[in-house]
Image 1: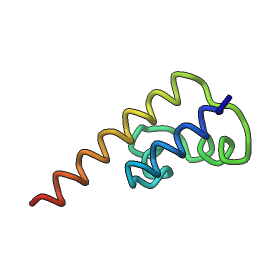
Image 2: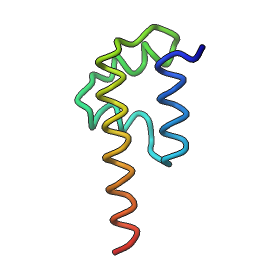
Image 3: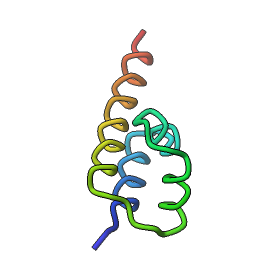
Length: 67
């Protein structure tokens, strides 16, 4: 079973979005990103915020690429 962080890594890679930028865009503290990166668990609500940020950043990148 994948952790929330593993799932977010996969989603950000497939969307070509920097995961750290997604955490910042979601308003999640840097320390939470680094703790999760080192293996600490994320809360479900935090993972959901970052997931939505990945989707939004991906959409923005696509829109800017078309301009």
